[in-house]
Amino acid sequence: MQINIKSENTSHQFSLNKQNALVLQGTEVSVFFNVEQELKQPKFSMNVTLLEEKLNILNLRTCTRYLMSGASGMTVLELGIPTGFELDSESVIEVSTLKRTETVDRKVIFYFDKITQTEKCLTLSVTRTDLVAKSQPVPVRVYDYYSPDDQVTAFYQSRLLKDSSFCDVCAECNCPHIR
Image (tube, rainbow, N blue to C red; front, side):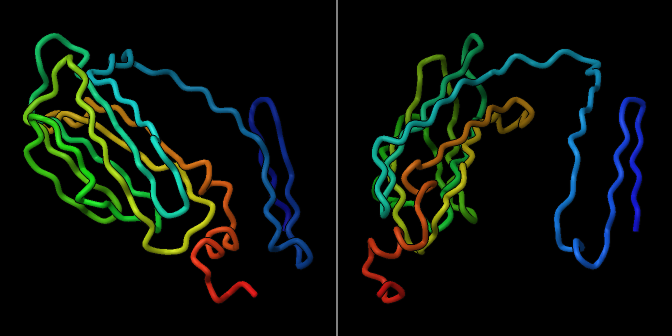
């Protein structure tokens, strides 16, 4: 099978046959577009810091503040949990205006009455429950409950877990798979 792709500036031909049917073929494509409206200035700032990272536990702090004058309305902070980990609920150091916490799938959702220009920080730990290696970046999102378009997203990733292999993760817990 021959596939031809043509655009104004370039063309590319792909050949598919029995020998290369399972080989990924691709080409770089540049796409340009115009945005009708200007991008909104973010209403929140946020940063996430890994305070300590080990194969079995991650301690992290997330801080946010409102960038506009006054205070936000009800604000939600969604903190993703890496695959193979779960929140140590005893570790959450609460701050004023935190009204509710819930866990849904692999994220913890914190509800605040408001966020002001004074930075609010949460410190917590997640502990390993399953053997997972090659950990991927995890999102943390803060947004206005009544206006979810007013949001900021950041990511965190454990370098230790990102670079780990199954053998590294398994060896830490004396797994019988390693001889």
